[in-house]
Amino acid sequence: MAGLWWVLFWISVVVVAVVTAFLVAAARRRRAGLDREEDIDTRPVPWGDRFVVLAGVVVPGGILAGTFVVSLGVLDDLADPPAEAALEVEVVGHNWWWEVRYPNGAVTANEIRIPVGETVELALPTADVIHSFWVPELQVKKDHIPGSDNRLWVVAERAGRFRGQCAEFCGLQHAHMEFQVEALPRAEFEDWLEREAEPATEPATGRTREGSELFAASSCAGCHAIRGTSADGDLGPDLTHLASRETIGAGLIPLTTGNLADFIANPQDDKPGVSMPPTELTPREVEAVAAYLMELE
Ligand code: CUA
Image (cartoon, rainbow, N blue to C red; front, side):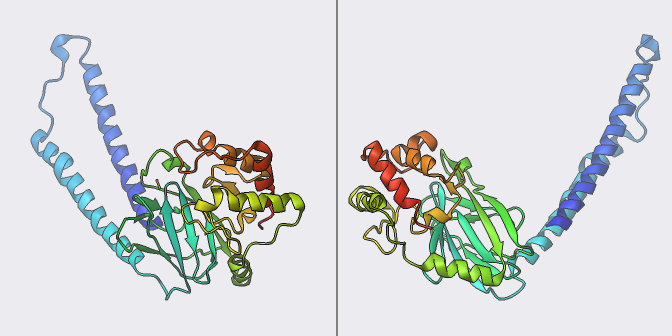
């Protein structure tokens, strides 16, 4: 991809330089004739018609055809993974967040972890409309299309974080459909994956126990799952290990107890149009629920 980018860059440099040179030459030619009418240079441009055909049709056509052939080669190189996939991760597009499912039962949202240096195959279904999975530092874009088994492979060559963004307009909050891919060394990745598959921790205090009971009894549990509890909704993000995540609303705001309580109270303030309705809980109850969720590391 970088090679193709540089080819296009240098072609652009040459085209801009040539066009600028012609503009400057044309401006000079006109200026020279401005003083006296009879001095205006009306001589025909040297091989005028042939020049228009050459510079306006042949050269651009050749450049477009050439870069098309080069990009077909790049697409072909990107189509097949360099090695057999060590891991398959399912990333489901939703309006407007990403559900991330691992083969061992771990489910998370908006934060994808992968082992560094290994080929990872991504299955990219959608729960609703067309989304587009795009991590510019790792791979080209690939659409999530209803009814289509679209797949993409990635290899993170270094440990670290790579920002991702939905790249297909999918509704009001398309711009707030961010995610991140974090590449971890194999051992660290496996530890994380094992923890992520575990059920949620029990509430630690009386107040967070109250929060967990409110969560289970309210509309929260109709849409969200907390594995190990009676909450098993599948419309919104799995919250089993919510507190280990960094943001709320797919990269929208940092995950803090205060932000979480505000978001639960009325998600429409932070993310207008999102499916989650304002809560029926009182402010005090919302705080208990937020305190409980922040224990779910
Ligand atoms: Cu999903 Cu744009």
